[in-house]
Image (cartoon, rainbow, N blue to C red; front, side, top):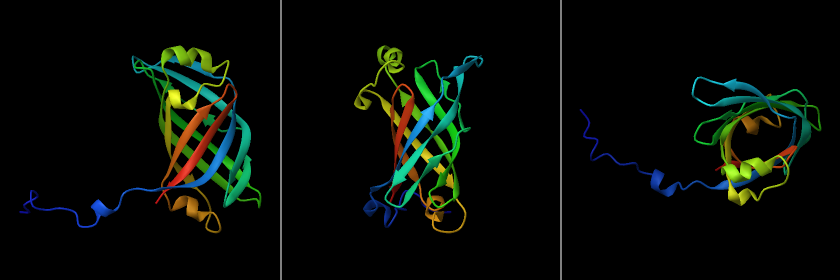
Length: 165
């Protein structure tokens, strides 16, 4: 049997995560519809994606209309994010993206968010993403972990994606 009290990692202490900007998205989000209360776990919303753009040092494209976001507004005021949509790069490659994460907005700001832009430093909006791309110039999207920082405008969702090094 191993003595786990003596076992220590060798290299992990030197591997402090670093972030590198990968790309940004501007997503047109259509108005939310409520599916109602989910047996005490919160209110499930559904929002369709109306389109948008992807821009970054190694990638540019258009977000395709038709994706969907299904946030769960929990009783504690945290939104659990689950969004899936696709984009087409400028050279015709299709890429799928799935965002999962959390958004916490104080209640007094949540009411205003539908009417005006709220300072993103006043709420927490973070995602982690999985991307699917075919083998080729964009398969780097499938070989890295990405985290996103979000800023919600009344009709546009801005997400900046960073590759975890």
